[in-house]
Length: 104
Image 1 (tube, rainbow, N blue to C red):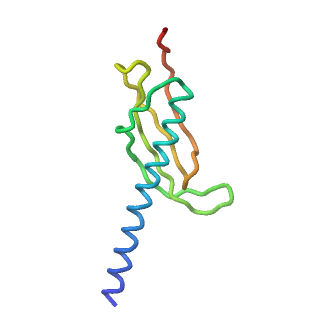
Image 2: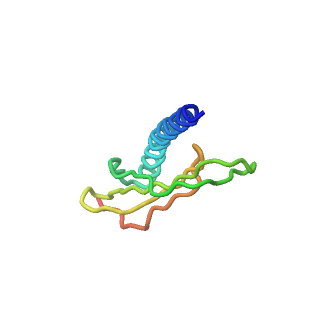
Image 3: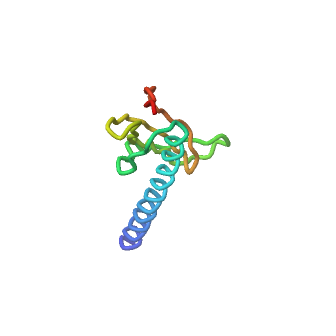
């Protein structure tokens, strides 16, 4: 009995770890897209999950909500803190602070 419980916990932990890795890749993709739409450069090594909780989608189904924080740069020298929230694989909210666009 105890072995079955430990095996189930190990499988659950492995699934959660793999799911977290795949959601980070999705968050990097969304962050890169948001940054390019704002003429910014995503500093993709800065993408980190800051919060994990349960949330509900529009149909009322429970899903894992993750808040990712990342940094972007307008000219390569400055850094701005941004964030985005995923509910499952879907982008729920995002925030990029106001900034001055570099002149060319």
